[in-house]
Length: 193
Image 1 (cartoon, rainbow, N blue to C red):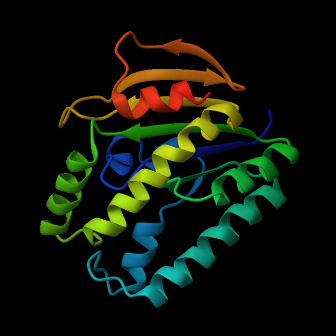
Image 2 (image 1 turned 30 degrees about the vertical axis):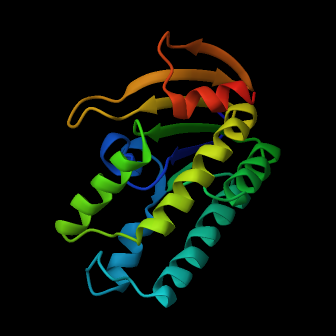
Image 3 (image 1 turned 120 degrees about the vertical axis):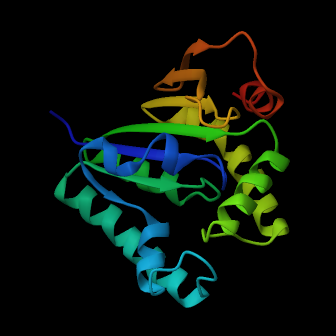
């Protein structure tokens, strides 16, 4: 059986860790926030840039080592940059099947509210302009993810405490399922396919 790369993606506050914890995929996993907190004396708040930089290096090493060993793995990403696409392409060349679950909330304000709630409980946060930039980059990269992943499921996670609603499924760049109601954030991505 070919190795698998499981990617849980979406803007900050979308519920990635709650809806699809990477530890639940039954393969080696990497959660950058947990690693950063461990290096920050157990605290998820006010993580210094130096720790984030260290964790990013550990994260990249984790992914590249698993690709080289052809060993299945799972990780989270905001999908704000091209690095995930580069890693997925490298994994596919090594014989991996790459599967992504992408979560988003109805609008940026919902994301901001959830990140603030998380921060109030001692979780990680960032200034609003940074969060908005990550949100916009993540949404802008979604059409590429739909085109390039072997399998992708796109969800809206707007109802607190409920199972995310699947809106779209694509296999090898072809949409095989699309919900009747498509929110604005996804409609723009579908239009760019």
